[in-house]
Length: 360
Image: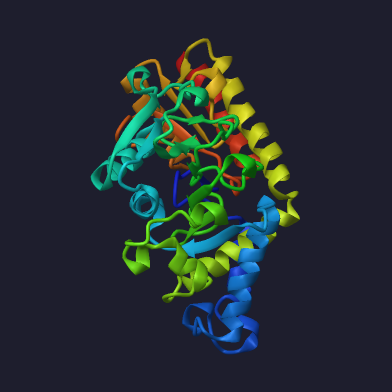
């Protein structure tokens, strides 16, 4: 039976990446050493490390005045590390709430200093991206934080807010490498790798140098971004295996049209599923408002809980893995990250149509 992996994270890796890893990861360049056991101070590993950084810069067209870091702790550590570095006394951190992860980021910042909610769609059960007017933000904001894609509710920023004078920080964990990034509007961006960039274990942080210079100087050394910038992300032992696989994933993205190729594929895959939902006559009901729909996570419900349960049972029996919604909200969700093949999305769409015909 074919397995169709729609897991929200860790999510599917490209089959080509897995094949290359099988061939090279466990006897790297015929040295008799796997990438997992090489010294991170060795020239062999440094080649892996710095090539991966260079490929991230190339794919995302990151300007030279931005530093690219490979850190650990996932986006969850960034929820705390960001305000520790940039939320100083007398300033406030402004958070735009568009889902559960932006809530968690806000809550963590509130433990560290003064954090405020600038806009929120919580009262609407996070069905849309909240409207933002940067012209009315107070001057005492240290930064503005947004979550570019919301995995649980299936909403996504179509474009980042236009940066004025206040730094903008972005959690792009679930849509990095799926579309180009407008760097003029970003001062710091972070993303756990385990959805579009590789396996779990490594977190990408990209930070404007001018913003870095404003960081607090009293942060514990390991939690200061500047520590890792100066050490080229080699301050302590990095997750070498995860970074190697991230590097292979970067090469795969390059070979498949780059970020613009990923964007075109994402729109096509998402369109197939949203078309099936919209044409179902409310048999399937999308959670997100149409203007805020995500190209990464398609969320929907069925007409009642019993039908939904049956749908998920039959989907699993047919090889569709990870289609159940997040445990906090229920429903159904198809996570269609870069590595999910178009053919798998077509198979899910066909199953949805077939199920509707049998149960409508």
